[in-house]
Image (cartoon, helix red, strand yellow):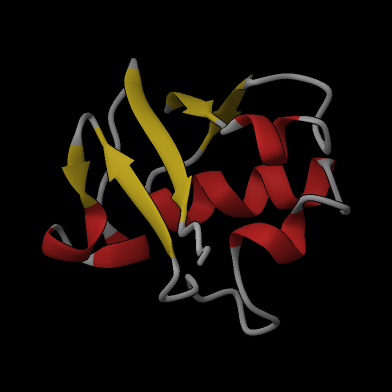
Length: 90
């Protein structure tokens, strides 16, 4: 399934683009495919076991994947996946 992955500016520099086209049947497969293409981006998207970090939120078509099965959430052609990392400050 063709999925469009939207990256925030802070991560886009690691992929040389804010938008990346990817494939996969699930969110996890789509993220894994992007991680394989952009090894410097990989550790920012998921942990060493391939699981999502608690401080990085993924939205599938504007819905938080944590409420759709996490990385096991199914994707369809044309879906949009957006990465939103937590920002801390003081």
